[in-house]
Length: 67
Length: 137
Image (tube, rainbow over all chains, first blue to last red; front, side, top):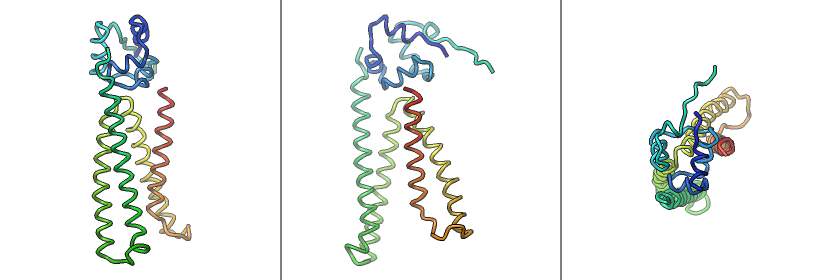
């Protein structure tokens, strides 16, 4: 899954630590989501969506994995 | 912006400390139950039983503290630990039974001790957590 988290975070001038604090997760989790190494759960995705005041589909885009 | 920050960090720290304390208490009483009969109370069965029961009770508290610790982690950290638990459980069962077979078939001249399984599972758990932590950095 692709996401625009890094861009949105930069627009708000937040560090990964700031965002992690606001979401109640570790900085490692924010970093892993930004790098596409980890897909957040639906509740966490909603939290991110609410924080940036954007619909989830504007932040996360599903990608079909090539087999 | 900082709504959950202190909650998550301080709660994780609190849970970690709690787990550390219960683990230390369990390890100390394990040592007491293991060495006490020989060095402290001359194999008195009542004192030995009391030490084992105390160790068992503290072990239950340690398990509950570990559960609280795991549940207090965020979703990525929980995934990392779940993965490590799956691998260490498998390694413990497979490695432990193979080691036991080596003993029952007399391939090894010594008795297969359960401490081997505990050490194996602990090491596999530690290594797997370290590998997974690095993977998600």
